[in-house]
Amino acid sequence: MVLTLSNSTDIDCQEIGINHIAIIMDGNGRWANAQGATRLIGHARGVESVKRVVQAATDINLPALTLYSFSTENWSRPKAEVQHLMSLLKKFLNANLRELKEKNVRIRVIGDRKNISEDILDHLSKAELETQENTGLDLCIAFNYGGRDEIVRAVTKLAKDVLEGKLSLDDIEQGHIAERLDCPDIPDPDLVIRTSGEQRISNFLIWQSAYSEFVFLEKNWPDFQKQDLIKAVEIFRSRDRRFGSVKSKAV
Image 1 (cartoon, one colour):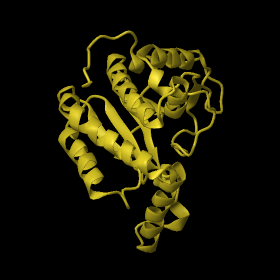
Image 2 (spheres, rainbow, N blue to C red):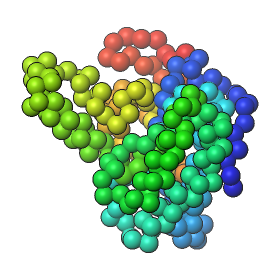
Image 3 (cartoon, helix red, strand yellow):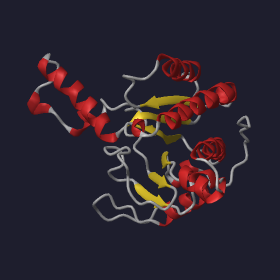
Image 4 (cartoon, rainbow, N blue to C red):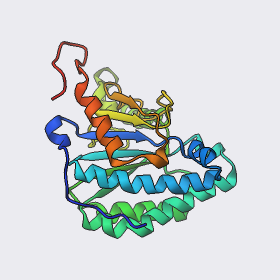
């Protein structure tokens, strides 16, 4: 199934005050077990949900969407499963890159690019290059990503700048770390969604999600639909976001 994006809208995220939604796409294995299928089939069905959620994000005028596709810890999975996940990533980009480009979606990749095969890097780099001029949805793919690893890489860059005399140790502020993260121009996520009923962050956007609202859905990722995204947005709207002070509910 090739991604098809529509122009219909039910809600407008920018009017609500949502500039970035991040999703921990969990439950492919649980879905497969419930269906009596293999985990590989579960991952393949999960890709279909990726296509749906990207379309839904454009429908509701969301500026940025980050998807947790492959973590630094996922390398410990069985070799056949890892290879299948790599294959699915390549197939998704090959099948949908043209459509994404035409629909003004910009692909961004966050995560450590070391120790990744040249073949995968080529696919990711091509997707970024061919969509870099697009001004619509920023689709951030968290690949070989870990929140702690990202912070370590950012702090390493910061330490190097201090050693080279580009920055004084006494002048370091939070912003100096933030601007050295993988996509510093993408706003912190207003909303983080996790599917499958698990209620943990799993090393995802640790720095950026300090003041995010979290919504945990029981539904497994392969069953995720546009209405589930809208449901999470509606939950967000009901929250009282104070950021440490006193503030009225989200619009």
